[in-house]
Structure formats: structure tokens, C-alpha cells
Figure (cartoon, rainbow, N blue to C red):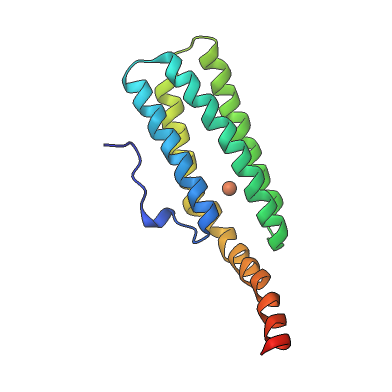
Length: 147
Ligand SMILES: [Fe+2]
């Protein structure tokens, strides 16, 4: 059984974000799998992939929040930055040979699940609204011209 099972309370209702979050969950599951099989090389590899992917995801999420004019975008960015720093510290210790895999995986799981369920839910209404509005002018124009 996978470490994290995707449940509907993790959905933000923004398809592109949910897809990215699901991918992050897959990486954490892969990480737990590698650790369970005592493969340090595999843990190192998946960890690099997870960090890369999460950084791109955060950048994408931040640009959506900015576009939507979400009021707490700076606070949310700060939360992302602190997490990135925390993971980089772990990654450094891991690369230096410390046995921190279990602690690292538990931290990733707890932090990301909590972040998705709470912080990300908080911006989802604003971003969804903005995305719906972005679709409207075209329909409006179409109606005016051809309706
Ligand atoms: Fe976020």
C-alpha cells in the first residue's frame, strides 16, 4: 500500500494544481518505497526529482495566486520559501551521509499534506473565480458578435 492515498479532501478544485499535487504525492510514495528497500541511491535520485518538481510547482502556484490578486500571496510565498530551505537542509545532511531518510519522509508527508489541505485551499476560491472570469469575456464577445 502506498504511504499516502489521494483523498478528495486534498482536491483544490483547480485541475492543473490537483494534477501537480498528485504528482508530488507520487514522489513521496516513491521515496518511501526506496527507503523501505534500503536503496540510498534511489532515495537520493527521487529526492532530487521531488525537490525540482516541487520548486516548479511552487513557482506555478505563486503566479496563479498573483494573477488572481490573492490577498495573502506574500505570506504564502514565505511559507513556500521556508519549506524549501528546510528541505534543502535535510537534503544537505542526507548527502553528507546522515541517516535521516525516515525523518525527512515524515516531514515531507506531514508538511505537504497539511499545506495542500489548508494553505492551498485558502487561495483556491480566488484562483478558480479568476479562471472562470478569464473564460467569460470570450463568451461575452462571441454572444455580442454572433448571438
Ligand atoms: Fe502552496
